Image (cartoon, rainbow, N blue to C red):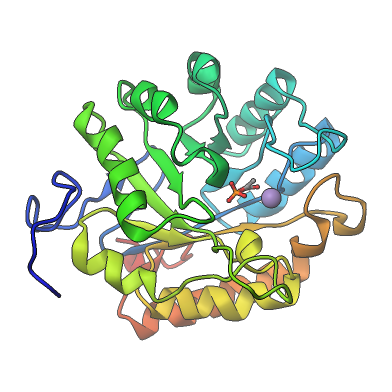
Length: 286
Ligand code: PEP
Ligand code: MN
């Protein structure tokens, strides 16, 4: 890679050679481990989140995703259950021994979301909300920093630098697709950024092929491709009734599709001599 001076520092490989590995109660992100984060786009009601969470826990999935505060393109779309959604998600995750990954949209919600989440997600629309990034730099929980849909690699790494420079080193980058001229897919999942990020930064990077493609049939092949490209994990949307989902139904996997994805992700991880965090054979778990 070219050797000109980078505008970011703490996130760079020059600053820290070894991969950052983030430890959670029940899994790790980074290192030899490939993690699989799954759940609905949004928490919709008690039955939905408990059903999905029970299914995922039986599959040995460690991290439940789901939005309680939803950034929707239209103000008329379902905006999430807000605090009630956080409570339901926490209850479901605790019942089944899972961790919670959920989005924090505003600075004044950091304290509230912190109480219920194990990983706080910054959405694509907020990647350059510097006030929010600063607030998240002061907490001690990991931050899942999505790439802005029109952000360059440098802007993304500088957003991560805000969090590290404020004192929080637990940042997970997430490639979720960028805006291009192509409209056949919802976004263009930029897989070439994955090995580039791994070369330039010590931070773990995962891919979100659900937002990245918008089409459930594409989620498994793009998950495999992301893992083979070196991603440290995958975040996908799965729903008990995708056709009735209140958000992102067309990109949400059916349960049987999710089971198939798990096999394919595991094969892809083994291809890179890595282990998945849901492996039943614990010898394979990092
Ligand atoms: C999501 O994960 O459901 C989401 C809204 O993500 P993004 O910010 O990448 O669009
Ligand atoms: Mn979504």
